[in-house]
Length: 367
Image (cartoon, rainbow, N blue to C red; front, side):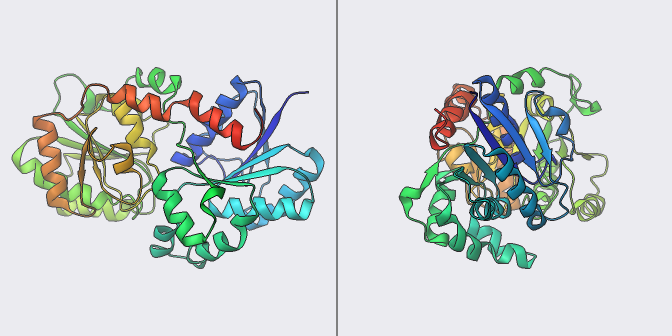
């Protein structure tokens, strides 16, 4: 009888967490593990990337809490040996669903962001209450996976979980698909041979990613050296970022092309990749850029960048929100690319799909 695991999360909207779950699904399928992808809503630009061997169950819920009855029905009908959930609200629903369904399914929840940062920057009651949820429910999970040491330390402090219940497993970022997709041509006129160097940012256009600081830093750097800035992604901050570009007179030098299904050709051909975030968990885009050999600059935000760069060994770290320091780091990287030999190999070693799948199979008891 084939071993089986169910994944449970919100949908396939194009973020880093969704890509991580897709990578895991591919890795599990390659090991002969059956995968059911149980989604709050089966929609988003990444839906076509779901492996054909994966069964997608669309719960059709407008809100995560409304997905609870559908997940309970699924557990009672299918009795999967293991359930892996991702992100706080889905994690809580998964834990509740197992309790209501009264099935022996092993539930593993994964935490991708610092709980304290989510609460600190909360704009809704749902996010403000995350600390309470984690304290009330996470102890009922069989294992809690944190995607970095920083996330694990923050989680133990915020949720008061026993440290032995939390397992650090890095995200499976470096895959064969990454290198294959990077060979395609970036659909953008600024990446042609002989063009000005391009600084690249990738992520949701949100306060968290702090692309406003990146744009201001680029404006400073551009005074010293001609260059262009491309930011891939979509989100609620677009009007504010477009206004800032206009105010700084950068309309001819900054491009915001929106969500791009395959950002890897852009990463491979960028002169500098910049992560400007205020907070993270384990920023996959930074790992992807380094794996492709692109020089990188990142904010030393909680948490992930310093852990990925091993304290600055593989790229420059700057303080959060410091546009002057960020501009200086960009200029220094343009002048003297900081991409030490061995960075791609180190990223593959730490964040490769094979080793991460092994670790997940262990905590899910599917080995």
